Length: 191
Image 1 (cartoon, rainbow, N blue to C red):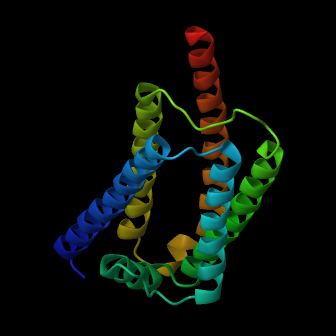
Image 2: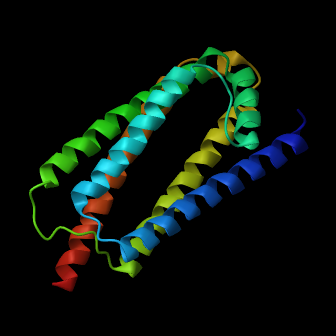
Image 3: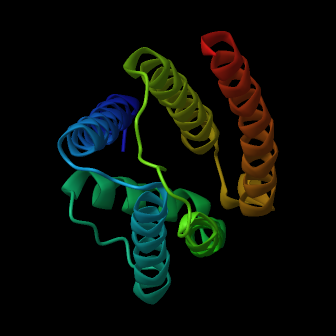
């Protein structure tokens, strides 16, 4: 694959991923406006989605098959470039999906007996959170693309799955703290 083909593939990949992201956000906004959704129901739904993704991914193994042809093309390309690290990275991601899914179920259990807990958000505040999620997701994609596309051999990826997973956990923890602080400051400013 030459640089132009890789660039076109990456552009399509980002477009489809961002389209899916925005579609899910729009559906989320519509659902919370139309239906009464409790926090427990919200966490159960997230838990189910994460568990399905994790189990499906682990059962799929190292197959690059995908519903979207662009993701299949990317998977074949990255699998060829990364070698065994490609499967390790995917496996770690699917295991994280399972862990997060279980955490969402624990959250739902913690919220099951609470009364008056209905998902209601200030749309401006939620839009800011979504914007930052969008920026962080695209930034992490760019870093991943640069690493994959600029590598010249499989040896460039020794330990890549482990390192990228540790970086993701560290960034996730930092962003979690930042979002929690922003949320708390917003709540206290409204009260």
